Length: 458
Ligand code: ATP
Ligand code: MG
Image (cartoon, rainbow, N blue to C red; front, side, top):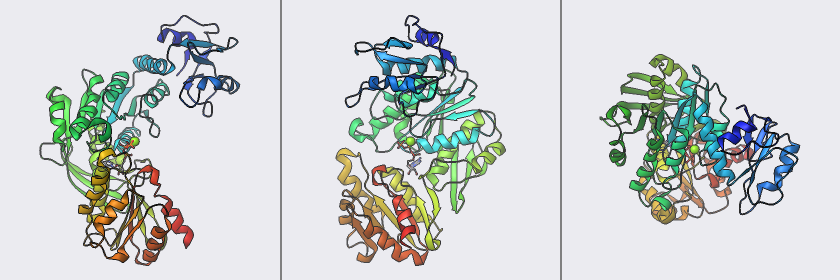
């Protein structure tokens, strides 16, 4: 972005400040990552007050700063805009900048698979267009405006992840970003705490259509009946279901794993075979959204096929990693909720990548009242006929452990509340069998450590 401070003052309906001709080339809320020419935005939190870092921001080359009205000590020797609320000012700036951009905006929400789908969609378009996407997980009321303000003016497609923890949040983000295309990947159980039920989650995710452009389209999980009532409000041609079900406009017929990823077949709007360098039928399903958006962008199926083959995904999502002694890890340790654990287990269950299969499951966090039943419920997914052994890590996994005791032989079932070493020890003893090892747990459990620790013990 390149705007004068006066232009930004206009966006915020503020008088032109002293030094208003200064050029602003970005925004920053953190002096550690501030770039020269940025407008610094201080937030007053419970813990820290960003206003204390304003001097530092200018030392690092900030062009100007916002300052919250009423906070004492506003600097007078540098360009400053006094605002009622810096967070709202950031959002308003993003709203106005978005209005001045020609980019096609694609908004992606869902309980699981937002980041994966974002990567698949952006990776499909990027060989052919100037494409930007949300970095990491910048998907909330701060991350989304910061992402929008970081888009170069000549961006053709911007793929934006939209996350939430309660009603109204996706609506807000969608109204701000005004997407031409929106995607709902699925409805799971995350944030049940705040939304009460899966119906509530479906309603909250469907808010992504609130800011959809009049000629826009929603691509949604056609296998989720709870989305039905929400998509009915859109014109028929504007609500496009994808998934496995027969009523889907783009259908996944099959997905076969290979060491390089998944080969999948589709029918409906696009017919044929595609490959993605990531495992799991759920990732192939996410790729359907990428195919649909690629077609909207005018790409041929061959162009889409070529791009999908070498899409780069953010790490730790069904990523294959070669381990010691011919073992193969499936690193899905980025995060875990019941739906995504089931998806990952389903993949390993039907996988022929290795003869011996172990699963390492870490606690699923943030489940509220569902915590105990959600952990216990995984027992029905775990059968000794399908898996050679199960390692459980974290205090909550004790619930699952109790359900599995007796079902699995004692030497094929390990639980450890805090110490990882009983688990690495067990896995190490199986390395000679070149097993497939699934790593799946919430972010806080950091199960990917196991890969390094196993390599170190050799
Ligand atoms: P977050 O809410 O943390 O931002 P996210 O929605 O961005 O998560 P990803 O990071 O893409 O989701 O994937 C999270 C986990 O969900 C991964 O383990 C991934 O394999 C799994 N997953 C991805 N897509 C689906 C899907 N369509 N259905 C079920 N699980 C999925
Ligand atoms: Mg994400």
